[in-house]
Image (cartoon, rainbow, N blue to C red; front, side, top):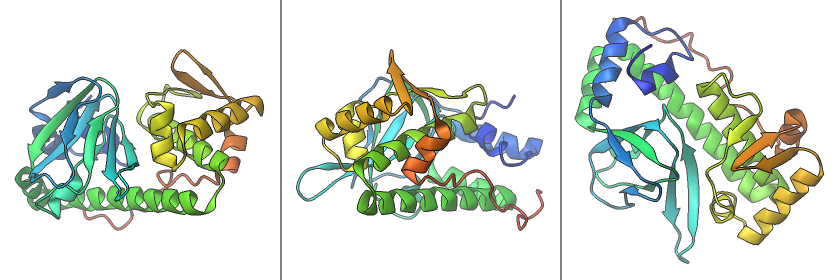
Length: 244
């Protein structure tokens, strides 16, 4: 097993060479353990750092003009976060831990070196980034055009699919690190409305909750309620260059 959490994620798509694994391992040489609620970087802060999540959950969010918070994305082990710093000198979003977490920070210049020496990795980074962009577009459409119940269902299904992709031992039960307020900030709902929707999904037999975990009792029905499309299931890798 590789020492790189990000390499383990990429190997879900295709086998990596030893040189590619070593290049990714070099990005995770330094680890930082953080408690829940730690701000990793704030929106508009000057930064040249990118991070790999090795353990725990992290969220990215922006503060809107009225002072409310919009959670953009949840990040899990194997995710590379803070990638906007490759395009901008200032952070475009705030990153905060949702649980005890371990992250690996590295300067974006290290990513340039990986891209120069390993064009196939650069192409794979691009594909994964596009999948995440389309997934975010799906969420944007959901926030604007679907019911409150569908939004909460979509969040639950997305967490299940992404955690299962990273850990094949996950079948239908996921640890859930979000408070109802945080779910609301991710779905554009109040905490009270989130509580009603979670209760409705439970009463319909789609989910059950216990001890900080959510059990997906009817995955197909929950995905249908959410109008969910798994954007990570089948990526087109046919055009990737050969590894060096």
